[in-house]
Amino acid sequence: MKKLFIKICKKLGFEIIDQNRFISPTLNKELNDDLSILNKKSIILPLGEVKITRSVSSILIVIRVNTEVEVWDQNKKRLFGYPKIDYSIRSINSLISSIDFCQMKYPNLNIKTIIVDDHSTDKNLDKINNVINGKKIEIVSLNHEKYVTRIKKQKTNETFSNLASLLQSFEIGRDNGDDLIFFTEDDYLHSQTMLQEMIASYERIASQVGKDIFMCPSDYPFLYMNNEKTNILIGSNRHWRTINKTLCTFLTSKKLLNDYWESFLKTCEDRHDPFEKYINKIYEKEICISPMKSLSLHLTNVNSSYGLAPFVNYKKLWDENK
Image (cartoon, rainbow, N blue to C red; front, side, top):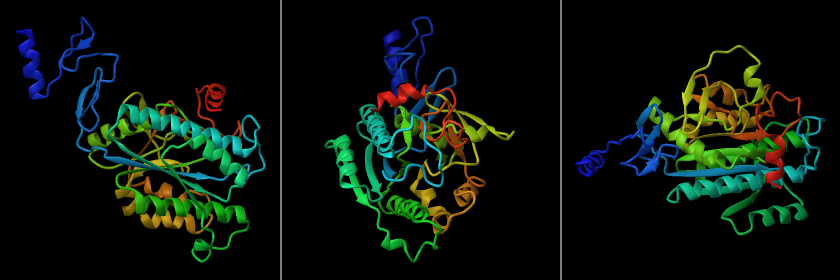
């Protein structure tokens, strides 16, 4: 009778929890395991099941790389004090590790990665290619000339390059993305579970709120500087909070990229204060969330409010991605 009951529950799409044995007979898993099924259901104890109405079919990752500029718009040194190429290499390495973990969990998910390189030396490009080591990652060069007439004249070439690489990244997302798009930069270290948790939490939360959303993988210190109200949501493995500001590393859908294309375009046409002024305006209308605790670490100066997320073992993450 018990076996028959389990079979009937499976056919009806219900899950059974055996709290005495701490297992789910219908899923044939222990309750400490990941009980969710991508694009079908998200199960979090003790909150139960969320039917996935906003499934994820693919993700395009666009990473901006500049191995020559130590810290844009600042004279301060980064945490650990290494040359910029070291941060780029470890960032790419951590991203590859996160992609591999996600692909292992979701083998049918289409993941594509494109690097937008801002005129790295041949020596540094060789180092990047050694890290990629045959992975399906495309490197495209930043086309400065394409944006000379589209971006206002800037005080420094570095600022122009930053705006140009951002605009080229957005255009790559618009032209090559199919579903989710993750824009990131080469001074972020990512936890191994970052991409998998972002995707699983995206489909869960987007299904609950009934619309596409924005996600930031870093729990920035500046988010705690003001006594602003926030909502706390449950993702796949941690809490997420609603926020109204990010930097230029975030995940969203192609739909929202297209819907707010003028805002993304304005962000790149000139150097604004704050830099992300028009991106942040989007969050007045759309939901943006960041994880608690952080899934990615922005490697800036140790005192920067835009950098190191709290409660992360910085040295361990740094050493793991050498």
